[in-house]
Image (cartoon, rainbow, N blue to C red; front, side, top):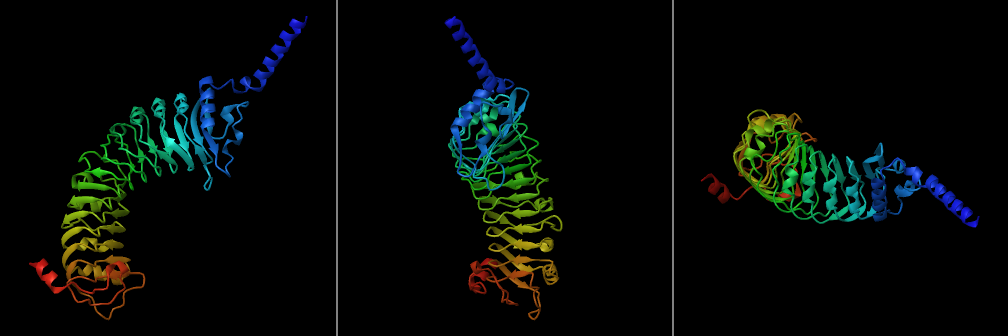
Length: 399
């Protein structure tokens, strides 16, 4: 009898265990259940965060914060509290993440996640959205991510990633957003084949080399490559990108001419400053871009009157010559131009009445050109104190 009761007692304990534990997550695939447990062990809340408070593995994991299921599979995992100001998580991403084979979305909020990206991410063949930004991820971007043929968004920005951008990333056919800015990436920009790519943000890295002439698709709307060491010409690349509404190539070493048709694209902000662009700049029509910055290049020739419709125009620190077009003066006095920086060129004159008052909402700087300043206007401190170029420089340049 004692043996019978002992066996019955064991059965009762087993039933209780099922009721309190296994039955609670019976709907979830056991592989996903174990993967979530491993992920949880690798991560912790930072002080002030309570994200993992709901992660009680005696209850249904599909009710955990940030866990979204379809049937018995986890299809989305948003790790950390997404509310602004949340302190986020710390720890490492466990390689068991690759076991969530139905996962379509993976995000980790800003925090202090460190270590490398698990190579097992390449096993998530249904992944469409991968965003792990503003953490402390190190190491290289796994080349295996190029196996995720359905990936649409890749955001690994504001980390400490090193190495090159894998060529395989560029072969992904469904990419629409690639955001790898503010890392320590080196090497060249790979060609991108996706005809749905709309955003490419690689600024603040250490990328070098030239852009492949056909490496950026015409679907691009946002392009930021600033603060790198990229070089070579861009006229063939840019002239094809007629959907661009934002472009920033500043702080690089690009050379050659700026294509005239670029100024007719639907761009709101054109940033090409601090490169080595040369030659004249000739827009094909009146420029309707609100802000155009071509400063600190080696551009030459006369200033096109087509630029007079720009609200904030930076042409300073180039090699422009000749007279400032009269259309600039008209629009400046009508307060239609907010900023007109022409300092540090070789301009020889501007037809403006010395007694006229520049509208308070407008800024004009003409100093250090080959002219006697017809009007005294405040200039940026960086323009220096000299009013005009030495005559010898002006003669030499005209010669």
